[in-house]
Image 1: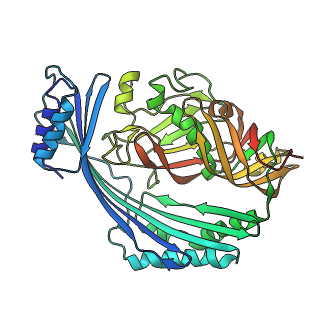
Image 2 (image 1 turned 90 degrees about the vertical axis):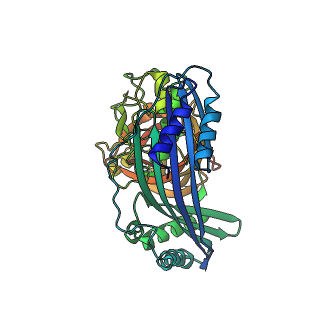
Image 3 (image 1 turned 180 degrees about the horizontal axis):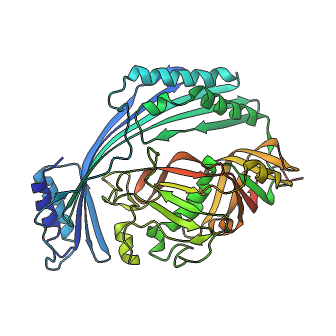
Length: 464
């Protein structure tokens, strides 16, 4: 989007007042949102985002700014304004920029830029009809296709230039069911770092029927009992608990400031020996994967916890300075308007040795949280509260009645010690994670797990 010659000039202006590192992040992103609601096609919402962010580091200080004016004057003015944040002598001059070869791990067959809108509408209408026709109590069915084609270029004062192209697609299905005095909702949102071939490979009929089915069945479900009890959490999106309550406190943005319950605990036991947790930004075509992070560092498979022992954190360039550590490919941002920081990619609890049946059979009386919904967490303490999208009572080692209104309440550091059984059915699910550097695509995941005891919130009285 700009020449190397101009990039060199901008970087050197940025470094003119004593900065020891400078970076230009250029982005051009095409986004699409295609929606069918109750059989009616809404006007597609498409957008083009482009611009540049410039960052200057000096020791443990950072300044950042952005602009959509990519002219020479616009970029030089921004670099000069940011450099005014420091008042020292120049310590670094850049004389050349060398292209760094970026591996291509996420090949695709059908670029999202070339897909006929009629193909998109056909898929959405089919899924929408399946949900709406499932039961007369489905009063609202929404099917959405989200697309993104992102081109980034990074120049930095290490004399390196990186370029990458990323395409992502996600199908979102929602069903709302109503009955006298009852209103229930269900959702599915599979996605990938792929082209339209991903959508063509989905079993949309099954996904749509499952979404409609759980919404309808929850209408007649009893309220969930409350109290402390053993809980089995299902695979896939169940991993959102680890992501929120444990993953965020393992990011260098909180660890480097001593604001994490896991700060200073590398090499120490922080989880039950059954728990191994990984963040892997290299998984081929995974929703949260990238070839490089948003600082130009190759993404990696980072083992965070191994057999209960804390191994590492998620580290970006700047927070790594505070910690005396190199970036491990975890610097991410929503777009050029955000300064990058340490973030997750595809974060999951690794598969264990048990079967899901063995885990459920081990619980005489408790809760099976098959899938989780939204929630909240305090990253400084790890305290969380998550709603269950689909939950059942376990009686005598068997899944019994469906319940609604269940929530899981606890603390991330505490729950890690209580995950005492891990199954062999690892799955990942897709979502968007919001934090200091914006909303980014991530995978959460886990096998079926057993938490020996956790507080369950509900309005159904005591479990019996």
